[in-house]
Image (cartoon, rainbow, N blue to C red; front, top):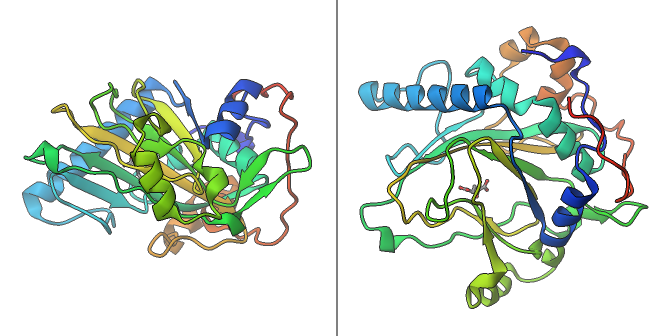
Length: 284
Ligand SMILES: O=C(O)CCC(=O)C(=O)O
C-alpha cells in the first residue's frame, strides 16, 4: 500500500465539484478509486460472504452489526479485516475530500461494506431516509462554504444504472438539519424531482455531509449492489459504537496512518478551509 507520509490533496475538489456539494449536499466523483482497487474490494467482500454462507461464521475478526441476510449483507469495522479495506479507508484522495468538507484533519469514525440485493417482492421496498448529523454538527467557514463534522465517502463497487438502487439523497437537505426530518422527507417524497440518486460506474464515490438526508435506493433490476463506506469526523470525536479500532492492529499499522485510525491527535484541531475559486490540488 502506497502511503508516503500519507499526504492528502488540499483542496481535493474542483470548484465545480465543491459547488455541487454546496448546493445539493452531495457530489459524485467518477473514477475516485482505481479499477484495480475496485475489483479487489468487491472480490474480498464476496469471498467473506461466501465463507459466511458456507460456515455460518466470520473469520479475521470481521463482523456484521446490522445485517447478514442475502438481501442485506454487511461487514462492519474494516481496517483490520483485509489490506484492501485499509487501503480504501486511508485512500489519500478520499480522505483529502473528507477533510476538505469537514474543515480540518479527519479520523475514521466508521467503515462498512455492503452487498444489497432486491427482495423477492421488489414492490416491498421503500426509502429509509435518515441523517447522522444534526444542525449542531454544521458550520460555515470564513470563506462562506458549508462544513459538517461528520461526512462519508460511499463508493459503489458495481456499476449502477438507473434501476440498480444507487444511494438516494434529498437534494439540499444538508441545510435543513434544523427542521423536522419527517416533515422534510414527506414533502420530498411527494415530488420525486427532489430525490436524486446515484447512477455511476463502479469506482465512483458519493461524497456527502451526514446532515444530508439519505437512503438506500430502490432496486428494480436483478443486479447486486456492492458498496463501501468510510465515515470521517474531526480527530477529537469518538467512533460510532462498535467501530473502535483493534489495538493490536493499530500497533502494527503504518505509523503515518495511526492518527487516522485512532483519532489520537484529539483537540489540536486547526480548521482548514478554502475559497470556492481555489483550484483543486494535484490528485495523490
Ligand atoms: O445503502 C446506501 O446506499 C446508503 C447507506 C446509508 O444509508 C448510510 O451510510 O447511512
